Image (cartoon, rainbow, N blue to C red; front, side):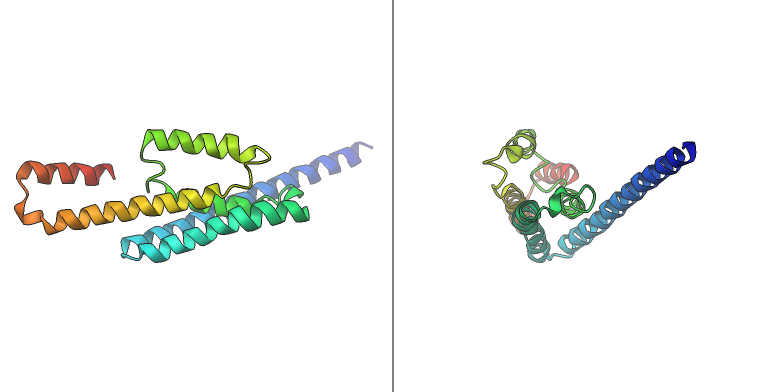
Length: 172
């Protein structure tokens, strides 16, 4: 009888370790995807990067949140959580510092929406992830336009204005 309990405990422990390893692999893959998207932005392909991010947001808000719950696959302990974990982690790593984490007010609003409203029955179907990606895209484009305008006026700027621009770049 003790051997059966020991075997069951070992089996349970092994399953937990496998689930944790699998989650770790999924988060690592999400981080690599986010790094590639950030590299696209650095190369000047922000439209491509944000189109992919928007696709991931659509995938999360429409397919994963609705279909996985509707079909019951989302209720399977590890298997049902991995797709959502991958997409959420990839988007979080990608969007970090792109507008929605910059302003404290926006950060607080995001956490309220993300943790409170997104778990309420009527509000959970709102496309919050899509809205966040579109907002971050807007912020990035606005900052790029501002930088382009500053670049065009670079010769006419004073030393103080140049220092202010440098401080903004350090913060961003």
